[in-house]
Amino acid sequence: MTTDFFSDFTMTVDGRAVTSAETIQTVNPATEAFIADVPDASREQLDAAVASAKRAFRSWWQRPLAERQAYVSKIGDAIEAHAEAFKRLLTLEQGKARQGAEWEIGGSIIWCREIAKQSLPAHVSENTPERTVETRNVPLGVIGAITPWNFPVLLAIWKIAPALVAGNTMVLKPSPYTPLCTLKLGEILRDVLPPGVLNVVSGGNDLGAWITAHPDISKISFTGSTATGRRIMAAASGNLKRITLELGGNDPAIVLPDVDVKETAQKLFWAAFQNSAQFCVAAKRMYIHEAIYDDLAAELVKYARTVKVGDGSQQGVDLGPIQNRMQFDKLRELLADAKASGAKFLLGGEIKAERGYFVPVTIVDNPAEDSRVVVEEAFGPVLPLLKFNDVEDVIERANQTEYGLAASVWGKDIDAAQAIAERIEAGTVWINEIHTFSPHVTFGGHKQSGMGIENALDGLAEYTNLQTIVTNRAPQPAA
Ligand code: NAD
Image (cartoon, rainbow, N blue to C red):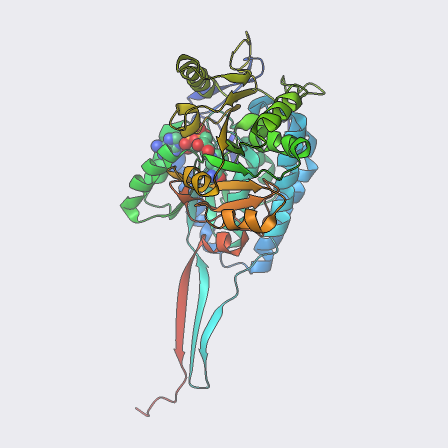
């Protein structure tokens, strides 16, 4: 099948293309130009997708594990075969620059192939001639997967690959802001997977709520904001759905006085601004020791001036626009608040773009600890630099948040950095590097950054129930 990646966006239900009476418009965030209409699924269409996934589940989970693993690996092959088209479409709908699109599509291929190697061994707790007790992982059924707009392909793959390897089937809903790559993924996989194993439906937030409340869905795997995560947790209680929630963060970076200022400034820039800071694990509050604060701030600004912001499809652009008008308006309001409360901008702070959702790289000089630019997850390129001079104080401030997604510590004295890392309340703490993910390393938030784990065998296990089979082989007394 040859797929036109830039038109004819259809949902995938029971292995077939489905359109809908209602549609949603998609827009290129760099130009605000219309891209395409996509289906806005009705409740009946969702029911059909869930029914298809439920039917497919019966045979899918009875297939040998090696077969399911091979299918998931083939998803990686299918993405690879269309990699260039995916990268271009991803930049068009999401806005990210070429290098970001390469990272996301390349990562999606790797994830499929690596998760396809994973399995959960049964645990035998008793094994005698008379009796065995064996605990094994069994799939849950139909998974409802709901994804956000910052990494639409990779975050969908983080759900599809383990769910399918574990023996589940899926109904996947992308964000209404970035449905295009996900719909095309569903389309190319019609030739790869048995019908019903992966259904892709598009629609607005209502569709997400219907998925969450659907009685035939056994689990919700969600990546998005903490506010939506709370709603999902409440709505999922109807049939006691399992839930994995990967939510927001306000990650601190702690920079100790012994770092090499120039070299670290560059790493810290990308720690904060990668993907135009629309990154759940972006460094969102940067605590810098006062001994190096001025030098590091100056280096950060100097490096930031060399970074090109623009339309991600243009060569030489490093950072694209904000993905959508809603987030753009939120950032505009956040900047206005910072300005009104007397914040000092070392760089940026003023939105000038006439077309496209462009927010300049903005660095705020030591704002008050309780100001909105520090307390809130900006989810855009607005970074507060904060001074500290005492380790106890900075640990306290770093942990002073409802979030607990990730953090980073930067310093030459590894023991000192580790001692700090161990006291940070977050699911991942990087020391002298950041944003290194792996299909074999757990990822998940503490506190209100989420619930449960993605990736690694712990992530795979979240798509299963444990089942214990107790077998008594002792001779039965004659009747
Ligand atoms: P969002 O919560 O607004 O939307 C995410 C998805 O949920 C979308 O598909 C949306 O349509 C759907 N949705 C909205 N309301 C719903 C409801 N009531 N029931 C079910 N589904 C519903 O989040 P967003 O703005 O798309 O993404 C940004 C947020 O995601 C940020 O807070 C960011 O930190 C977080 N995020 C977290 C991770 C992580 O792994 N922890 C990764 C990426 C993004």
